[in-house]
Length: 98
Image 1: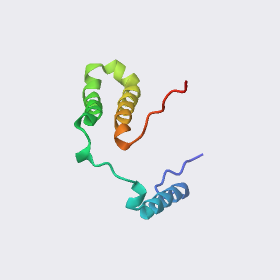
Image 2 (image 1 turned 180 degrees about the horizontal axis):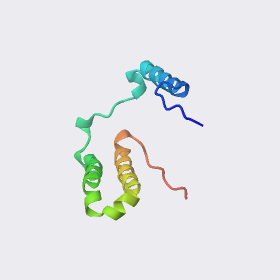
Image 3 (image 1 turned 120 degrees about the vertical axis):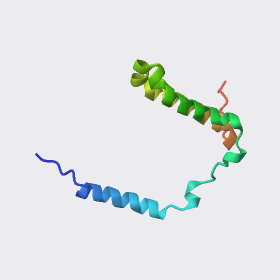
């Protein structure tokens, strides 16, 4: 059984045309209110800088650990970033039910 790996195979054409139609119909209103980076407090940049540093230095400093657990490090930084960003966008934390 041979696989059709052509860029113009029927399945890929359908996928490409779907993606292209979605991109052509996108409007700025669909993006929602954009975050104004100039008005965000500087500590919100720390998780981003930490992720960049861990991508750059992780494979050098802890090679064996990094190749096994790099996804966990990315989830850590992404979670920290989203937790730090949620109060600035007006999201309220849920209070525990007593």
